[in-house]
Length: 280
Image 1: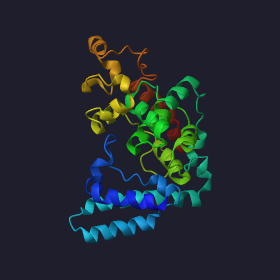
Image 2 (image 1 turned 180 degrees about the vertical axis):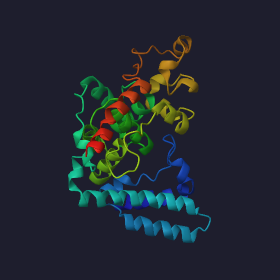
Image 3 (image 1 turned 60 degrees about the horizontal axis):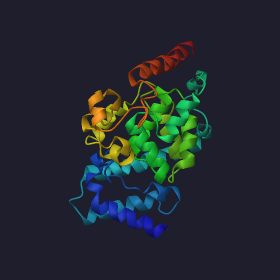
Image 4 (image 1 turned 30 degrees about the horizontal axis):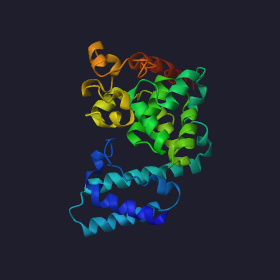
């Protein structure tokens, strides 16, 4: 409700705004505003949030200008999604960039799809996010990007499948933001960096979950694994796995795709877009 939305906003401004530029990327920390469900249900408006942030900054001069700028830019990104959806309503189901219509996606691997939805891909950062989503209806934005990239790029499953799954499972499901986010990750939306952006969730985990706290929370079967291997258990020596009480494909799956080779396969698949451009 509205009262809870304002409570959440005030708590964020007082406790987390100054750390937002960095903390917003760390899934194990409460560094984001968590206002997205309230925005999605209309319990608070973007204009109200902007005015509240400006009032907070005026009252507390120590508030970092950079923190305010980054936070408000995220609100602007949300509003840009509405701009795109209004002027290009076809983006609800189809790419903004019509060149992507030439792609003939391979048949969906149903085993891979089921593994992704259930958090059983063998890629810890993605699996942790998908489990967080299933249990809470929410997923950290940094992890959303990694989960989406794995599905579309490494698994070559069209973004529309993931968009529909997020629409069905996210408590903050918002048509404009959801579509824009999936098209951004895919590279077919309003973005200057197209198909060759492929997230490496193991490296992303090292960078944004360096102690493995997020993984241990949502994938308890990996909790005893040393931090060095927490984001890539398939590379851990046999003795390390044994000491942690882990047998891959018994307690936790092996990766359903190889991150390196599937990246190269994706780049080769999406390179059709360059040929299409020349022909056009």
